[in-house]
Image 1 (cartoon, rainbow, N blue to C red):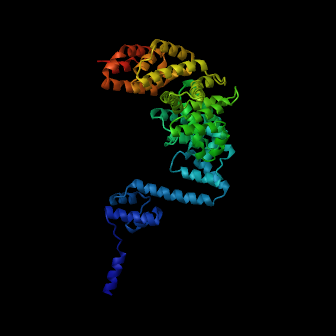
Image 2: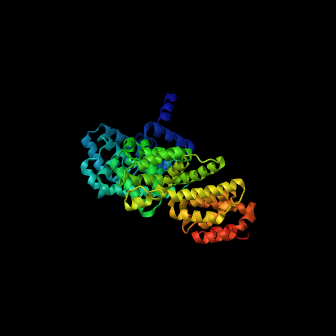
Length: 486
């Protein structure tokens, strides 16, 4: 009898809950196994904490070391999961009603799954009567919907599409300007991925993006828009239904050829010929010429084409041979440079005509360069530097390509310690020539800085020419940093 009374007394006592870490672990285990809806009332009842609300229980949990925010979040997740499960069993009409009531709160990440679940139950298609409201009542909320629904809204509302896509493009241009130019193989920026996801398999949205890219490039002449033109097209096959947009773009074959050049880090002469054949095969007055010129104005393509011209002429001098295909190869590479230089004009004026190469002036320019390179190889001073300087000046004034090739050849001359070429090319460069390639200008100053350490006498001999050149093209401060104290 006595033992049974003791057992009854023991069972009537409320169970104990440890305080601190031990108590919180026990509570979390119960919450995970039973859920907050069952666990909290049970513990309230067991410990005499039941009231009109959960406040007393929450204060008790604070004593045990359980954070109130975690309890709220767990309760919210449980309620949301139950609601999503219930939506799956509801009719499409009921799901549409839930969608209508919850849509204004889709920006809240806690409620977004409910909206998306209701939309999924409706077949993933936004009802037509909702579409005009995304320009007024629900303005901007479409960005929180799934990609397919978002594209549906944008296809129906050009204003919303322009607003959001323009913001994405601005972010992408800013991001690419703050980072080094990356190849196609490297990790793509989030902003570019966001644009690709926004376009997906929608040809109309893709056309909207292209219009924004052309407008941005025509207004600013920023080659980052050209970079995005190529990178976006190449990213489409990795997006949902993006392959059909890629196949429909008339520039898709050109993009594949340019991707090969970027991956190999060079514009080989064979690739240059196939690229120019594609572009010059397009009839005049066709708008696609503007897009192709933009893609050729991709910063990496322009730099690689110019470097290939310098490298190709250098190889001819070393081989002491001039094959029949030499001028054809140089012409193909020069056309790529010419098209990239004319991209802004084509897009801005909308006069889509293929620019003509100044063959005679380029032949004179390249012949003069070969003469200088050959003299450096032989270690002999050219017989008449003044004549070569005159030829280089005249040909660079007559040829847009030759003018923009002065800096790449100057960079090579500084890198190889070719004093004669430096003395010819510096005076030949006209005002504003620094705009023909920041990369090559940086390479030139990097090489000249090494002259200061290794051969100060050589730098001293061209100091006056350097200073005059610096004042003419607007880089006096950079020249002073290199020459002061010599």
